[in-house]
Length: 152
Image 1 (cartoon, rainbow, N blue to C red):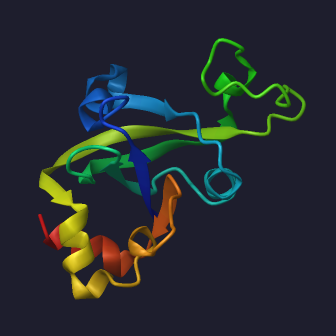
Image 2: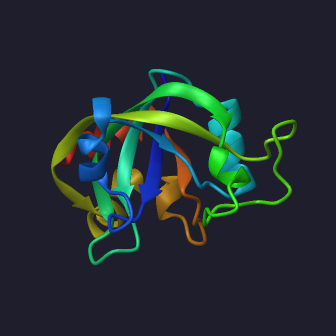
């Protein structure tokens, strides 16, 4: 099993939105960064665990846990001209963009704010905390996963 962190703006789609979906499952669409796309397409597997991170909000931080329940497939929003994520270069033959399905596992006992993550010495090498790292999807190593869970 691998561990991931996936960012979403809670005003757009937060952990409570995921929990409220039918079967508490939703596709993770709209990723338009090649590095993040490649991780979803090439590395994410069914059963992988995900920290659901609330970004671009008053208190950014880790809000809950999800699980990958469907591996990468073509992101249909790339072919929808009415979508904010439309890409005219995407086609059925060459999808260009991918998504995975994630399922709500649980909310954390409390939101673990970015400020606490930054202050924890054991997390100093975590990708999320490195300057300039703005990826919406990133791997989390097992030790960091356990450290964060212990912060609940």
